[in-house]
Image 1 (cartoon, one colour):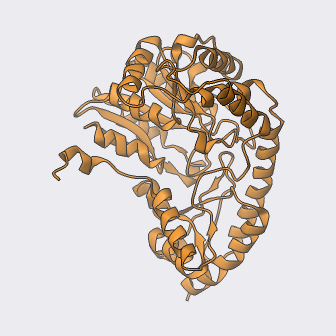
Image 2 (tube, one colour):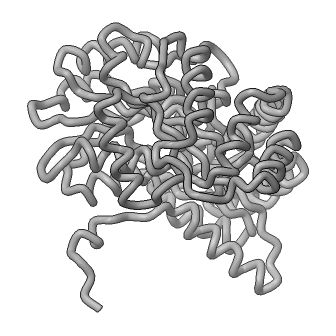
Image 3 (tube, one colour):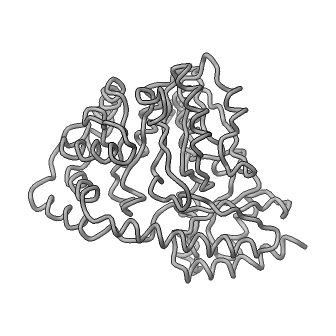
Length: 389
């Protein structure tokens, strides 16, 4: 079967490929510690699960509006207003099955053939994949360790051109755990506002901030009508498999994104959306407890990695990943990740899974038990010792 040439431009997400390989090794009898997948290891809070059960029993199993149930859009608008200190109407909210469609639909709606899209590198691989798929021109901005993995702002300012149609930012960031400071966001916002360039602000890890304040670019001067906020329930409420996300954007763009929903997924499952209302309006203690536990694990993993030969690791301020520097091994990141999987039984991702500027790094998720994290560090030591010989 001959597929359309554009399919060659569509990438993938390496975390799922490594997960599949790790599962295959497990079927062969190997014991694998999973540090590759970005998924909280906590259960969805009970009150959210109960809300879904009640919704199913009440018959919430039919089509709903493509933009989302009105009551959930209202709850999201209120939540965004409270957490970003802006006024939001339900008409600015589009609910999608997972947050990933918001980046897909936004890029499809705003970038065409030859249009440039600025995005972070290393960064979530789907950004670059969809830019290419849409026929756009990816313009990567390096995230440098010496600046805490913030935007290389001088490079960013030089990269904006008359063909720039979208800027993508992600803070707290996957894969580095870096956080954009207010001053950095102000420079990005000033340039975006002066040129009228929309910004897709991927804020899915907002709640996973361990030090400092969270700042959303949407609240900065000139950005209210230029910002698309991407957020969702997968990370904060341990609802990855529920597939529930949303975007908050100007009404005109929301109408286009809703039409993309009509043409693709039709709508998000109604009973899942009702569970989302329970998540936003219910007890937030489980979220705080999870974030506190992740902070403790972060400190454990950073300390352990810095004790390994040939490894140095900054303490990330957000998300639930570490991005250790392995350049002293003098080996490609992909080779080191492969050896950790096959020799140590520890599944991690090469930094290059997140773009060319990820070379020299690995990404590890610490969304795993303390027992497994300690075991993983012990297993990794012989591999890194052998790389020093």
